[in-house]
Length: 374
Ligand SMILES: O=C(O)C(=O)C[C@]1(C(=O)O)C=C[C@@H](O)C=C1
Image (cartoon, rainbow, N blue to C red):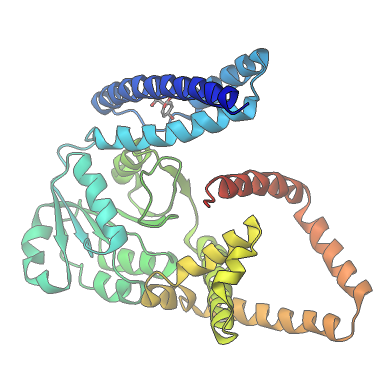
């Protein structure tokens, strides 16, 4: 019996080793793809190729009696490695005659990522931090792009100092609110202006499929190359109006982070037994704890600034608090019918998205469960 098992396991080991050899071959091929893409300025993320390839492999899997979802999962995971490997091959310089790029706050986490991406794309990048403003005039004189990457509460006052840039220089920022910094950049600088908001944190391994939102200031034909450069990095560019962006951020950022913050404060105040919570956690609860916990591994300054970004944000959080209080009344009154009515209203409001989210979260939870150990 045990011998039979061992024999089968030996065969599985052999198959896994073949899988490894095949992965090695694939990684080497992708490395070459990275070099070709670098030469020709092609984006690392090729959605049409991925869709066509996955459709073919799924069909082939089906005919072999392999679950199609299995090969799709495997290939998606493998392609995540491809993005990182292709990134390391560097990127074509879309605007070789640009001059230097100056990143103000380029030693901050997200600033560093942009510095790295521009350097991988062959640009001369200079970084200005708090201590080296005296170098600024000299660096600005030959700059083709100045990118402001400082904490939100400093953005406007830093932009105010940028009234001395060359006329053709692009002025851009990556602050997570857009209207006020954009207005300030337009007031200070006569040349091309664009507001950016990367919708990801600094810990992403590549920019493939990551969203970068941009709000036009002026001179869009002059900053097209920048959008093209970021598309080559694999980013998906999404144009927005600054005001509607900021309104959406009151929900996506301020309220989201505030509720995580409040939940964390509550857990700590209750002296919840974190280990026990984890031992007893379902995958979705573990993800929720991770979402809340990861907030507290980051900078309190950053999150205070994001949560308190605007009056709009404060008003949104207050409206949520009010709603929370109203809903609590359902609880106090043991009003089950009222609860169900409110529930159904929301379910209708989500519409088809409800089902879609159920499916999507199922996949995520399976992945979370796969990475469980012990
Ligand atoms: O075919 C390409 O364009 C690749 O870069 C290779 C590859 C892959 O690993 O198969 C990786 C990224 C693309 O989004 C599509 C496919």
